[in-house]
Length: 103
Image 1 (cartoon, rainbow, N blue to C red):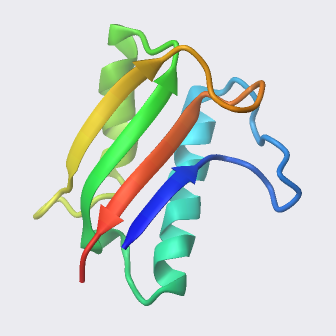
Image 2 (cartoon, rainbow, N blue to C red):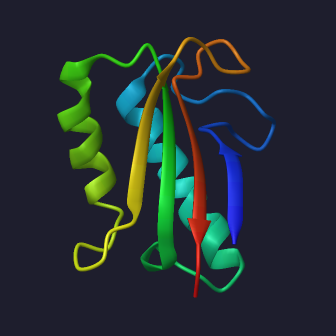
């Protein structure tokens, strides 16, 4: 299963938690969990995750790792690519995530 372009937006497409990296990371991972469950899968089925962060700073990496680890299977975590980028599609967005899952 491929899921791309996941962000922390509400059902009306409004950015939740504008410019709040940690809240958006959690919200986006929650959205991915919902999408996976809707297809009969779970976060345990993740094999690869790409996280795009606007204005990523090296000192943010540890906190990002800590947050994402709470969502991933500690026995078999997915491969993760973390990329710093200049901007995303909407003002206030700091995080976008793509995933690949396999059951």
